[in-house]
View 1 (cartoon, rainbow, N blue to C red):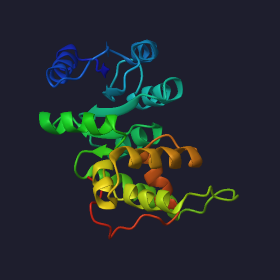
View 2 (cartoon, rainbow, N blue to C red):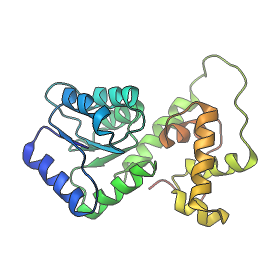
View 3 (cartoon, rainbow, N blue to C red):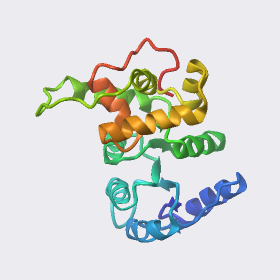
View 4 (cartoon, one colour):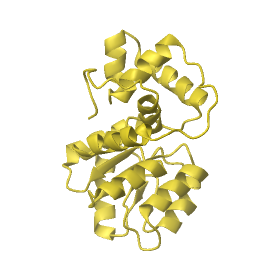
Length: 218
């Protein structure tokens, strides 16, 4: 689903996606319409502008995540402001791409978003990881025992934290793509997290992110 209040831009994005073989199940011109039709349209990916006439894209992202958690949100915005990026990710966006991105980069971002990979315009990934590290250095509230992950789940989690894709992880560990997906989904369920961005944050907060690991955030 494509959500943007500019008709020409919205139609162009929808057309590019359709020509690339994607099924564009709906478009929306504002936040209210997006939230109204998402449940019926059941999109796998929502390409969402941040600047909407009736609500911020951050609020719409939060609403989509609450009402239809199966949808993965890829923000496509003209803004590269740090606060916009961080607010969108904290609201549940899987990726954040600038509208200046080339078409191949955009189509690749949509594909990776559908796979659950965190996707960011170059430079923004470091910003997000830096913020997560800052939050990780703050005193933790509460306590309690951490959920127990298997050795393999922990190994994959470390790789996820560096930004490696499922394909890269599968190749490194000589596993199938599906097996890696299953391990990630199991980890998400055990940790009560919703997507790979949250998983990256968890890994950093618990000292599992190794900056020296090859294949870092993309």
